[in-house]
Image (tube, rainbow, N blue to C red):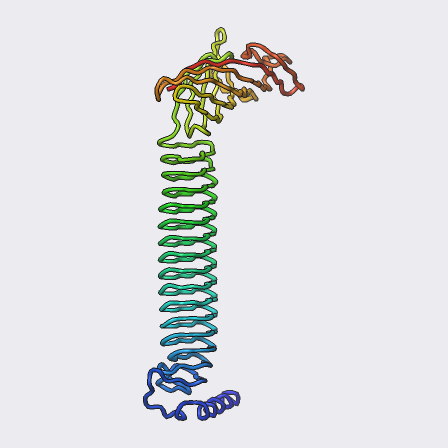
Length: 424
């Protein structure tokens, strides 16, 4: 009680000395100015019930305050609310609200709010919100929102949102969103979204989306998607785009067309790209059917082969990658590397039984949809399969052996080969 009495006495003494008209204000002009104000609650202070019409250099709100404006410093134990503009610093234990423009710094334990244009630094334990175009920095424990264009930096524990164009860096624990164009960087733990063009970088733990053109780079743990890419997409699982001038690197890449560059991954599908079906024969597998997909510079190869072996047969399935260089409309050369697993009869071979082949082939094209090819290969066969009830390795599928050796566990055989076929 003694402490409260002392605070009350100090407050009313200060009010009598500092307050306009010694607390006897009846009406104040909207442009009224007084250097210092002190209040307990809105309307209970040195500016009286007309506090919304006064601008101060120093505003002290013991619990909460409502004032016309601040050019300087405002401190509030709980909250500060300004009817018009702030030029300076607002610090509150819970929240700051500015119904006009903010130029300066807002710091609060929970939230900061600015209704009109802002050139400021906002620091909040939970959220910062600006309802108009803003420049500056927003740092919050949960979220930052700007309804309008934004230039600056946003950092939050959960999400950042700009409903306009941005020249900015956004960093969040979960998601970043720009509903216009972005020049800058988005970094999040889960997802980044730009609904217009992106000139910069998106990096996320799960997915990045740019609904129009990206000039720069997308990096994600799972999926990247963009309409047009002038740069790079790198993801842990899939990339998708319409037109690409650059490169996609992922397990699966999908695009409509490539102007330059190449997709690199296990499976690349380019609608207006490279799609070939081959029928061929080699010295090892007498009949082969192969699918190639991607672009000419770099394509994926899926292949299967067959070799009759007396009363039985051998079969293979393999994967590889290759590149085709055209000299003109009739001639070209391709280089392929393919690794195939070989099994016998109706069983799947569980031992190591791998045939690796590096092929260089000359192509003669008859129009756009047909070609003859033939060339040479260097082959390596690696097996841990033994003959039944024998200590000898089973390598009957190999036609001849130029060089071979084994360490008792794996046998290696190397030999040259040839290939002939047609492409559709």
